[in-house]
Amino acid sequence: METITEIKGQLRLYMNGMASASMRAKGLVYKLNFGIELPRLKELAGECVRNKQLASDLWEENVRECKILATMLMPIEDCDEELVDVWMEQMPTMEIVEQAVMNLLRHLSYARGKALQWLASEKPLVTYAGALLTIHLLRSGGIFDETDMMEIKDQVETLKETDNVQIARAARIILENFS
Image (cartoon, rainbow, N blue to C red; front, side, top):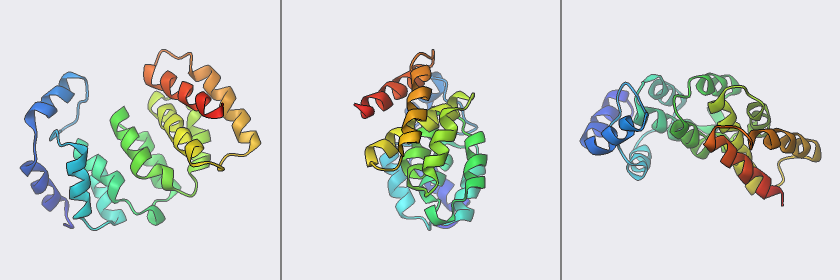
């Protein structure tokens, strides 16, 4: 599949109204949410041509599944920092942040710098992205130097006391990775 129209046609086939209604009830509000499970989205992504334009076009849709697919279809080699900064400013939910980190951001050559930058953000979704990215990079080993590690420790000591449960949990996981 190579067009948004083709992809949306496939999304409609797999629509799960109960899952969509449940997400909406939990505060995950999108212009459109098909309620499609991640394994099905991964399968669909495997049928698509990976290219920057398609991923960018999918991202522009205010549709949960399109945003997730965008993170799966963006070629790592074509994903420049400016685009990542724009996407980060437009992150709608923690779920999309999680998918972006897992599918794309952790693989970028400049992920280390973004993790450090985002950990210090005032915006909760950006901070959450920084925390998740830091966890992934710590677990992959060897990417942070001693100065980075001191900066990360300082940041997460503050973050673990936040009222945001997900950020506090991520901060505690980061600290556990230092042990």
